[in-house]
Length: 70
Image (cartoon, rainbow, N blue to C red; front, top):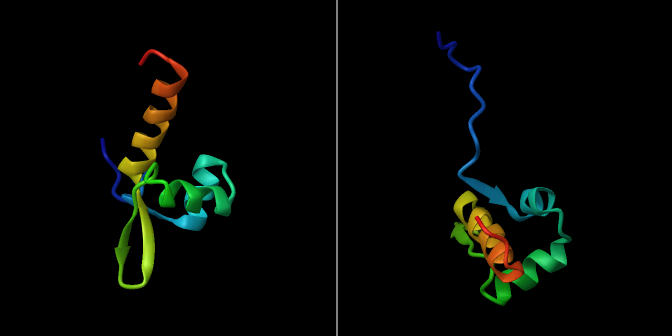
């Protein structure tokens, strides 16, 4: 039985400050990854957002570079 409002909904986008928490990286490292094209972002107005899918892609990239089998 489902109770409305009790399901945790994962965000589709993270602000850069939130992405630093999720990835456990510093703000400067996050911006370097963005500049290097290793972490995708989108902009909405003047806000830069990191899609949740971009975080998953970055984790997969790190795993593939480390030779981790998925």
